[in-house]
Length: 463
Image 1 (cartoon, one colour):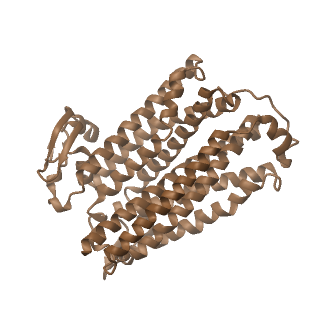
Image 2: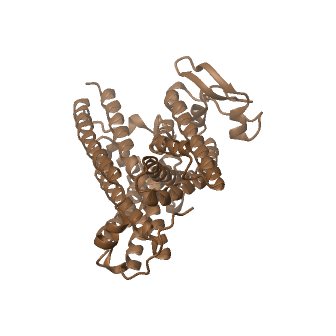
Image 3: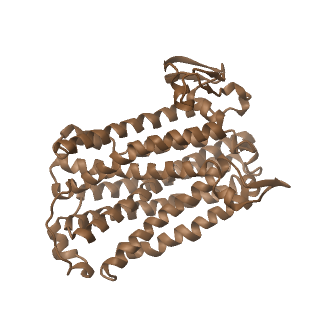
């Protein structure tokens, strides 16, 4: 099998594994924050509903956290096997960042996850709450280091290429590279927004079926507050991140917009069929001056074109173009859900609007789709480089790896990951169908000894 086939297969393998893996940290980062909120509300109000919500969602967190660990392990092995040249060249800059993620985030999560899951009758309520906070902090720190490393590949800074390897000149410049702040905020907000959609969607399902209404109302209210606050914030952060990308990766933006010629007054293409071979679009449906207004805040603003670089230096335009539209389109659906929920709350019909609940249920998995679409824009738009503008993907591949070996492991990954994901969905479905346990059961059978003496409160749904 020719070498270029091995490279393509290795790229497909890494794209598959990283896309599979990103689903789980996206949920655990956001869900950890919700768990902190649930436990804090219980400790402050002594309302048993918040405790039941915590005990329900922590099971989903533990299941998802385990899947994230298992699915992420193989990524580091692929760096060494399939992408050894990339590892050799970038290792002095990126290796310590990945190591810091393990030393600071993973150890913090692993150290306190046991207390969070099994420490109810072993420690006091404040220490247990501290464990929940530290696990949530660990997930945020993990995102910090991983996104610092990824952002450096998008906008390398603080290191110089010396004798075929990057040598760090300024660690702060490496970590806080030009695209890192906006990328960190954008991805973290995406995680919390995705989780808010999951919480509100599952709670809306309970409300529609008429089961566990006392608990579902609390969670639905919390989830809809999250969507209302996070959806417009995410749109703002996406706009700022796009302006940062325009400054540092103009060809990626040209692919996102499907714009071939550098010019002013560029329309926003709602629909188009980019033809990279002919270097033009087919079947355009556009908003006049839209791209110039979005990117330059000026209807006559100049927008870069793909033809500014050679064809071999252009990213795969079709994937970037359509992934961007999927992400943006879903973002505005999330905004619509949040505004609808806010209007229903103001009218006092938040728990009675049946179409609102159906809309929330339909958008339950949509946050994951938007997150994947955003990652496709980011990673495919960086091509043909692994280190943008400095190291091409074809030069990052391991020269001794054969197409047959990569194909074999790719098939094995598809089988194993398919089985793992099937098992995950099976147990997740069982947890959701079972739902939060009744309050009476928690009080008489499973209520933690450390907080059994706390002053009980009335179970009043949060508005």
